[in-house]
View 1 (cartoon, rainbow, N blue to C red):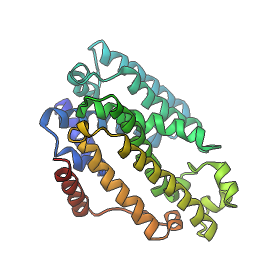
View 2: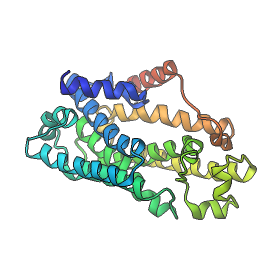
View 3: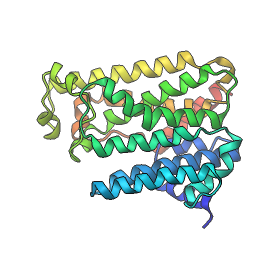
Length: 279
């Protein structure tokens, strides 16, 4: 199995909405995005699969050293070997890969976030930075596109957090800012015990409004001259924003006990519509 085949297998196993949009990319960009996505899955799996904190931290430290290897052209892992040809070609910043690992370390150290400022840093590291790397792979002329990519990453991660409230709670995690729980008169135990209520609905609706505001902000910031090159991200946005609106339509508090998803065919249709919109 070649390094790129390994990455394709890793991406396919995830079943993510993101990978649908990759098929619309030219081969070189598609391969680069597949390798980037596989890197994110590898470091995320460290946190998800290692129950022992010290073992997980050791593995993340290894990944930091492997990023260093990548930038001196001596990668050891299939994912970094697959990434190697694209680092210079797409001007991928080393610090961004390290920031992603820093985000995974936050998942090791925290299972609560006191306020949105603290959560914002987490979202930046695990999602906005991926947006910045992706924007470089897609290509852009106007540097304002990086602001768009940053805010779109925020929107994606906030959508993930909303979708996964119940699933995260069953793992003992609450990503919703604790000061916002208090303001909504929702307790941590309400979330952990999956108690649906009007107060929880109001809390989740507020999170949805914030995520929507990041989608709006990102789309306003995208320079028209770069929209065609960035349409893969716009396809992802169409799918994820539809998911967010489905959650709201179905009554937001239900995220505690069920997980909303978009059927594959509908994802493909949304992607196609966006592709032609920005053709």
